[in-house]
Image (cartoon, rainbow, N blue to C red; front, side):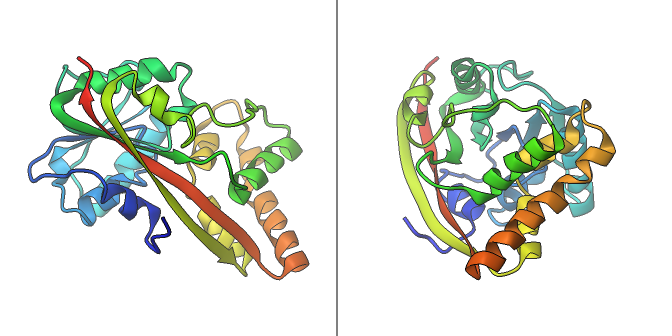
Length: 251
């Protein structure tokens, strides 16, 4: 599907949102999906809970909520061990985060535990079958800076393998692809997109990387973008990702 929409708005539009629903954004990051949930889909901020395993990331999201005057609730917590009662939420989101978990199956079962029997899970991720310049340039920059990271051949949770993993916690799993293409004629424009991705924010939150090293990362990503624009006249970033909508949690 080529939507012409922002991915976040497109994905949230697939969720069966209802007035008064209490929703968990698990692995919220800086709030990439949280803010459109509240601002575009009119979910009351007091009904939204956000958790992230990174205390620094949870604090950043809290500051952003304060700036936007939202009364969202925040906690630092692992998706594999959520601090909420069974069946507490009407809906749960786990967007572009499950591939970070050491045990994805345990995380899926925990998400199924905290959603009520009529509730839903929205989980988004990337396709493995596409070039992603923003990640390609990110990892090349990490190599240049000598920053350690876990290298993977294919994602542990992608559009191609995610359905089977989600079926460990949900009886109904539907998937929809999102396909589009973004063209960048400016390296600064590409860099602005890069600075929104979770991997960049996760790197900023790492305590084992010196601040002066972190500060070099954007310049290295920008230079790679500029090199490709200079060579080809434009930087084309094909987009192929999607969403899973899950119902019937296995209790």
